Amino acid sequence: MEKRVNESFKITMNILILEDEKIKRDIVVSFIKSIIEDAKIIEVTNFCAYYKAVDQNKYDLIIVDLVVIGFDDENTPKDMTANIIDTTRDVTSLNYKTPVIALTRFDSKAEENFRELNSKDINVITYSEDDEKWKVSLKDKILFCTPPTHYDFVIICALQKEAAAFTAAGYSPSKTKVVGSLSYQELKIEKYVGVIVTLPRMGLVSAAITSTQAIEKFTPRLICMSGICGGIDGKSKIYDVVIPEICHQHDSGKWANQGFEPEVYSIQLEHELRLKINSFISETGLKEQIKKNITLNKKEFPEGVEDFDFNIHLAAASSGSSVIEDKVQVESIKGQQRKLTAFEMESFSVYEAARVSGIKPKYFSAKSIVDNGIVKGDDFHRVAAILSAKVVYEIIKSGLAFEK
Image (cartoon, rainbow, N blue to C red):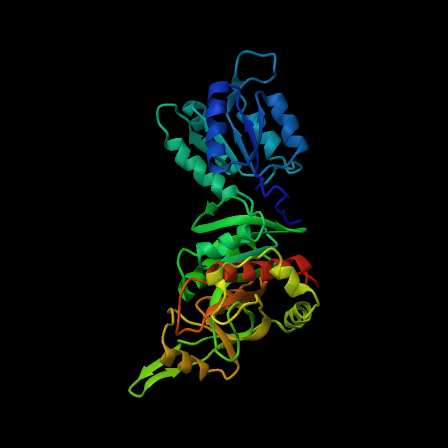
C-alpha cells in the first residue's frame, strides 16, 4: 500500500538504532535529524531489545553497532554480529530486505565478519568521533532509503508572488522546504494533501524540468498550474481566469527567409476532466465564492471599470519562452489559433510533462489575465494571482480531478 502524507505534512521514515553507548547514539540521532527532521527513530541499547524491535515492526533503515551488551542488566559488550545477522536476515523476518548499516568503531570485528556481513547485504561504515567521513556515507544511505513521498496534487507556480497568493487567499501552506532542486510548500485541501512548487525561473524549459521532477518525486494524481497570464482583446478581459482546454507552444517552428514559420503541437485536456471542469465552473455561486474577501484598491480596477468582475473560461491558450510586449507578436500568436484566448510561458510544458509521464497524472492550468501583451504593468498582479489560486483551490477541493 502506498504511503500517504499525514495531516501534519510530516514525512515519516522509520529507523531502528542498536547502540549501547549514549554519546555515540546521541550523535548519530542528531545527525539523522539534521537530514530528515521528521524521521521516527527507535533507539534500543541491547541485543534483546533489538530482537524484539525487529520482530515486531518493519523499518526503512536499521543502524547497528556490532559490539553491544546482550541484555539491559549486562555491563560488558560482546560481538553480536552473528546474532544480528541471524535475527535480521532470517527469511521470516519483517526486515529480511531492510537496508542495514553496521556503524562501528571496532574495525577488527567488522574485518573478521566482513565476508558474512557483505553476503547478507549489511554495509559496514567505520565510526570515529575524530573523523566525520562516516557522515557522508551514512547520509547517502539515509537519502537512498528514504521512502517515496506521495501527494495527491502538485501546483506549479512560475513566480514566488503566485505561490504567495495561496497564503493571501487565506489558505495555510507550510513553510518552504527544499528537496533536491525542488522548492515547495505543503498544502492540505479538504482530504487532499499536496504541494505548491515554485519554479527556479519563468519559462517553458524550467517548467518542463521542474514539472517532470515533481511528478517523479511526488507521484501525484494531479498536477496543475496557478498564476497570471496575458489575454487576447475581445476574447477575454483583465482578471478573467482561463483554463486551457487546448494549449500549444506559439514559438516552436522554423525561422526561414520569409520569416517565422510556426510548427504547432497542441495538447488537450483529458476529455472527461474537461467535461467535469466545464460543469463545475458553470455552477451558480462559484464566482461569488471566488470573489469573497478580495478587496481591490483604486489602482487595481482596470481603466473605465468600477465593479470587480471576472469570468472563468475553458478556452484555447498558448505558451512561449519569452515575455510578450509587442502588438506584432500578439497578432502573430493570434494567427496560430483563431480561438486563442490567453497566452503565457509555462502551461504547455506542464501539460506535456504530465502527458508523457509514466505516472499519468491528471492536469490542468488556471491563470488570471493581467495584460493584453501590448500594455503591461504590475497593478493587476496581486488580485489576479489570488483569483487564480482560489480557482485552483476550489477545483481541487471539489475532488472532480480525483474521481474515477
